[in-house]
Image 1 (cartoon, helix red, strand yellow):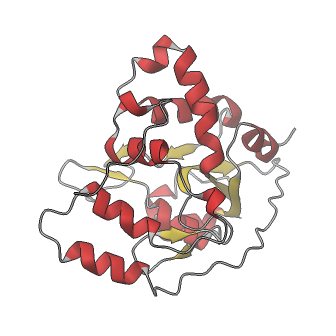
Image 2: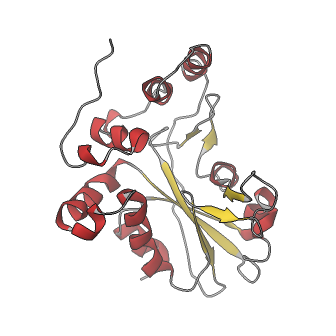
Length: 229
């Protein structure tokens, strides 16, 4: 079974293969790490990953003890599948030898949005989000994996009709930027303002609550977004 098939079976349903050179063009600091890897794979997920995580969370005391159980779980799912291939996780910061001079601490995130756009998995959104042609803004970028010359990887091209026009999300972003003391709910509204081709791809309230607040107490509860005052 190919790496793509394994990742798909694990719940990572949004994938894109790209030349490693295209990823390096967006993040030159990856040059030495991706040397010898002709291609790279962008790994992302949609709403369908969340129930898998919730089930494992509810049955694993070790997972429940993690500060950020979802990110820990993502690594637990991906790492055994990629094996010795280089992998960069979107939620991790990497030391200055990899991304030098990019922050005061000498650490930085991989520019996953730019890489995912270059891979054609997503397009840019005027609200500073990325938009997938099928699931819209309800996509989470998880990792970049180097593909060996032996990897026989074919990723189907998504055929959806959604492209960002900025008609609603740009207005929502402007409203947030003009709001003093904007909260995570205001930023959530920016994402939710995007017209999605099918509402089934929208993150549940519980999933959105966790991603925006990291509140572990909501996991598996069916929690709803707080009402606006």
